[in-house]
Image (cartoon, rainbow, N blue to C red):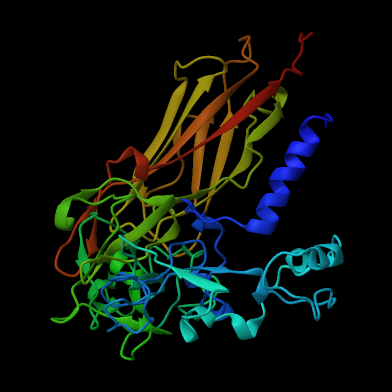
Length: 474
């Protein structure tokens, strides 16, 4: 620092230290609520963490009037959010560096005593006994409460995704609707025994008398478990709503209490994202939710509820598992002159079908989309058991499924390319689909699972590489 500037700064700082100054200042605050850890009570942090503070009053608002009153809900100048300025006289003096000193105004004795790292300002902890001085002793000047005007509202109720079934938990949750996993749950219902996830994106009420019986699947009889109508799982299945505070007293008390749609509670929810059903569930459903998310939103007595996301994981296609090699390396000599080989491809099952299924296997030369041939059948019968899928390969084998229908276990006959050809293999595409639409029970409606939807067919592939070990092969 130059010799000219240093005396000037010393004179200015000396003036403000001895004389002080008065004025006004505008201070802007911003808060990243995504980093808010939530209520001090850890039991409620899964509810409040990372989101806007819940409103401490049933009207959803915070401060009123001059904002310098109490936090009593009936105080016309109520103060739920405040900013207080604490003077240095309210700070703890852990090293007693100011003990016995005149602190009424800056002075040399006081300033000479202060050492870096030992002063109350360095320690920066307010004496707990002086926290409420601004309210209890308005004539003092060590603590000043400033008006804080709030022109926003916040939530009073929140959504907790929880399975409302009395017999099964398809969310595999902790068992506590308000547990620490509340905002990290995934719905994985069994499409046959539980039902199919469906959503038309429309608002719905939260009915205290909701029962999964109204959406249950039906089978042919008590002994024949072949499906007649699949069950339906709408967003209502996982919708539980709780009011966070008990507002009955003068000041709010955290006490999450479940609420429903009634004449006194205008409660409505909706899941606008990831829909797959037509309006009011009247029509065809062409896709499922294998890796999706329902985001619950809505309003409770005019105020927006604190919404929550629920992950979805359900595959409603016919089941096909390729448990074989998928890439087969075979000797040509084992596939000619009436020699054949059988290779395991995998398994199939479809408990969701109400009739029969179709399987088609089409083969193609490598690097070509011109079909060599196709084996197909529409006579696959539903079963609770897994059925084998085998490939029967050879130059004398005809394309087609072997044996008499209807089929459970399957053997697909596939003709290999002629031995004299230059093809060193081929690939196959497998498609498994339903032959009839599947009705779904959604209480007051019966949408259907579209059998013709490409998204609801299961597709797989395999590759056969032929090693030419025949006479004359180089």
